[in-house]
Image (cartoon, rainbow, N blue to C red; front, side, top):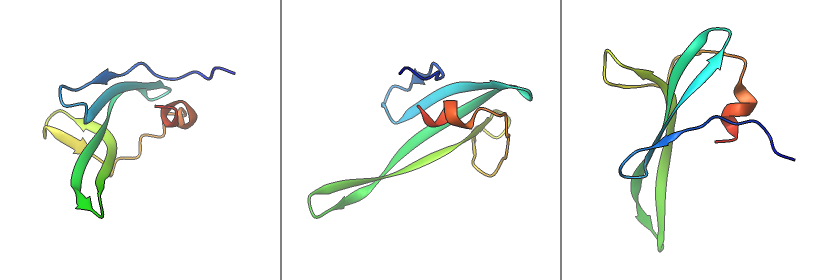
Length: 77
């Protein structure tokens, strides 16, 4: 079974993924960002950040609650 998902763009470092959430609140740019935390016991550890792209501040706003009724579609990224 193929589930609907968003198209996304991959950043140059393969650590950033951008896409647009499209729902009743409009088209909102979202970002998933992986940041390397370090290595321990032969394993690399990363933090996964997620949120709305805040163009004015030039960063990810991970405190915003968009609720664009597309949670399941976003989780398939």
